[in-house]
Amino acid sequence: MRSTVSAKSGTWRNWAGNVTARPAREVTPASVEELSAAVRRAAEDGLRVKAVGTGHSFTAAAATDGVLIRPQLLTGIRRIDRDNGTVTVEAGTPLKRLNLALAREGLSLTNMGDIMEQTVSGATSTGTHGTGRDSASIAAQIAGLELVTADGSVLACSEKENPEIFAAARIGIGALGIITAITFSVEPLFLLSAREEPMSFDEVTGSFDELFTENEHFEFYWFPHTGNCNTKRNNRSVGPEKPVGTVRGLYEDEFLSNGVFQAANYVGRAVPATIPSIARISSRALSARTYTDIPYKVFTSPRRVRFTEMEYAVPRAALVETLRELKAMVDRSPLRISFPVEVRTAPADEITLSTASGRDSAYIAVHMFRGTPYQAYFSAAERIFTAHEGRPHWGKVHTRDAEYFAGVYPRFDEFTALRDHLDPERRFGNDYLRRILGD
Image (cartoon, rainbow, N blue to C red; front, side, top):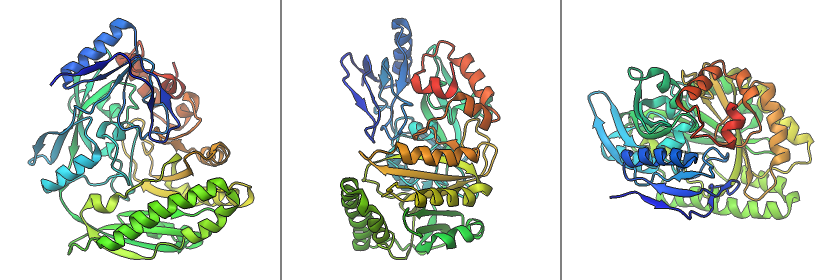
């Protein structure tokens, strides 16, 4: 199998449609050696290089006018090490395929996000996460990685090999090189029991500390223009397995959460005055339910309604105050918000530019339906988040720059110094990285 090179690549668009790029050429390498050669050739031609996954980032992290690397031939599991509890997977493997393959082998990641369309390298490089009291982001589960650097060299990185690079490259935003393989820590397949139920905003915020402490994985959605929330608690279970019934799953997860929700958003986009009424109906549409299943069937959900998103991590202790300020802002503004606000948590980790680096964190994500102007809402929300030393998700909309990040990441200079060492000519640079990391 050989790599393919396209001199006429056309326009690349991300999933949300808010970022486009016109690369000079595209390369689809079939091996690490071919990827290294593509990086070296780009250097000879004076072109920058970016790898792109499935385009689920809302930022221009992967956009380039140079060489666009498509990793779809770099997929699959390289090896399973049951003795050490690790699985090494090619970087272009979609999370969906990884989760299915692990389950067939009786294995699982410890924690994961709520969608699984992204590639493993794209998801980890931008800090994709789920929710967890004790278990952190997908990147925090990385035990090793393989990285092609600006001169085409291939580096093995772990706590023992190139540890300073490993500390940063697990969430490297594509700035340090192109990841070609990731070794994840995994564990024997287990069961999770999910309990979903509506609660009021005041109930959730008033008892958040207890809900967080008592559950391994707690998250909730608040519906703007209402006092209503939907909550979800996931905890390990000894069984038996009791999955969501087929009919109920189709009705609630597809018909209501995707079909009806999308139709409601089209109505809201056309007639914004209807949104508060729609929100009150939507927030009461789903009834309480419990089910028990293997992890990826509990952690993840289908997300077919397209949107634009901003998400900030704030210190977990500041969550309730921040969220109450967000609600007060929406209540007194003329904004009409048709998407719920998502709230999750993560424990502190040791990754240099992780949004949870060095501090227990809570995430607040705001969304707007695709095609709906989002700037006024996101700007107002961002002012609240930054007042609490918020750190934006690297793959979601924000307006922060390197000066801001130097103030909220204690190890920011450590990352930029490593970048200077690995990529002094900014072979992997683009306009987004210039803004967030400096020149």
